[in-house]
Amino acid sequence: MRLAGEIMAAGMTCVSDLKQKIFQMVTQEKPMRILETGTYLGTGSTRAFVDAAISSGHSLQFHTIEVNEGHFELARKNLSDALLNFKCSFYMWNGLSVPASLIPSEIDVDFPESVITDSFDESFYHNEIVGFIQDDCISKAILAMGGFPDMILLDSAGHMGTIEFCHLMSLHDGITPFTLILDDTMHRKHYKTMELVRKDKSFKILHESESKFGFAIIQFKP
Ligand SMILES: C[S@@+](CC[C@H](N)C(=O)[O-])C[C@H]1O[C@@H](n2cnc3c(N)ncnc32)[C@H](O)[C@@H]1O
Image 1 (cartoon, protein in one colour):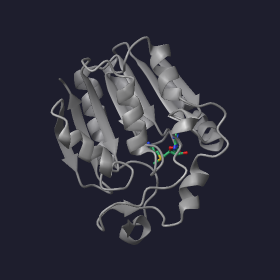
Image 2 (tube, protein in one colour):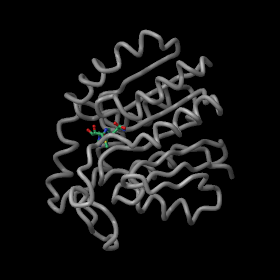
Image 3 (tube, helix red, strand yellow):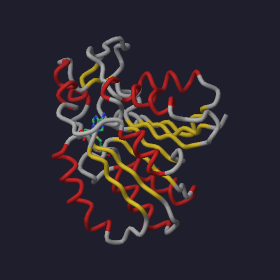
C-alpha cells in the first residue's frame, strides 16, 4: 500500500469536485432524505449538502454522523451561520455509525500495492473511533427519517468504509432506489466497497473520479 502523506499533503476534507457534484445532485435530483457519515468539521461535504439544500429550496431531511466529540462540536459551530438559512430538518448525530460489535479487532492489510493508506500503524485507525457515546447511528438515523435515505455519502474512518457499506445494505429492503456517494475509492476506505459494487448488477457507477484519493457516484436500482 502507498502512504497518503507521500502522495499529497492530504487533509481529511473532500475535494471541490465532489462538493460541486453534491451541489448538482441535490439541486437536480431533489432527494428527500440524505444521510452522511463523517461530518468532520462540517466544512466539507456537510457544508456542500447544506448549501445545496438551501439553494434547491425543496423540503428534505439531512442527517450527518460524527464519532469524535471534538469534531462534532467544531462542526456545530462552523455550520451555525449556514443553518440560519436552512429551512429543512437537520440532525447531527455524535456517535459511531455502525454497531460497536462491527468494529474490527484487526485492521485489514490485504490490499494491492496501489491502494492508499493513511498509516501502516494499526493504532492510527483504532484511535480514530475510541470513546464514542452511542453506536449504530446509521440505524438510528434511518429510523428517525422514517425510511431509507435516497442519497447517502459514506466518508468515515479508513478501516470502516466497507464495514459501513455492508451494514447499510443489511438495513436496505433490496428494492428502494438510492444514490450512493463514496469518498476515497482508491484508499483502503472504499477500495473493497467498489469491488462489491462492481460485482452487483443492481449498482450502476454514474461517475468515477481520481481527484485526491478518488470518489464515485453510484446508483442503486435493481
Ligand atoms: C475523512 S473525515 C470526513 C470528511 C468530511 N466528509 C469532509 O468532507 O470534510 C472522517 C470523519 O469521520 C469520523 N469517523 C470515523 N469513523 C467514524 C464512524 N465509524 N462513525 C462516525 N464517524 C466516524 C472521523 O472522526 C472524521 O471526523
